[in-house]
Length: 188
Image (cartoon, rainbow, N blue to C red; front, top):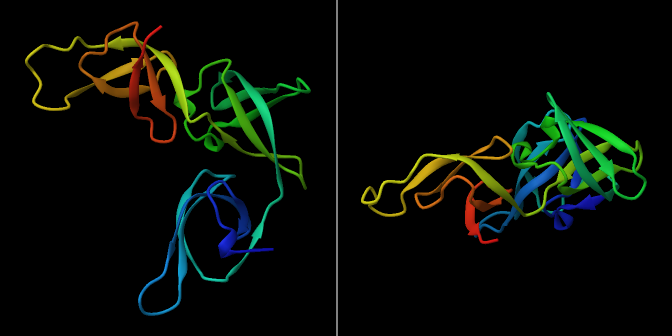
């Protein structure tokens, strides 16, 4: 058993007869009244996100997890197939478990959290950023900018990302996987 002081991003807990992963949290100490922890939880079975508030000192039941390095192989419908880089064992996971399935390129290394009690995969931690090639982008017309103008571009995985007007087809761009936002253009 853990308490609210042990809460951190990525912690897996048992809550309401389901397993949830803490996506974000905030410790709040109001001027009047007891302290509490405001959390955003994502269900690892359905992918549903809910907000919950725990009072300070509340006991939570954490789930023991192991983290293994996997490589993304391919997607088939809503199923994504991964291979353990140590044992070469393959697993397939539903699209709901993934944080940013649209940004996952074949061959990308990810960390998979596995429940030690049931040996079932719980969640997939993507790298903090990925580098993808732009496959389609409308040409940016000079003079159409006021400030920070963006346009929609399609990357090699099929995801759509808002990029600055100077990005063209064939450019490689760095994308933040947590937010799905453009970070920078990558020179080769």
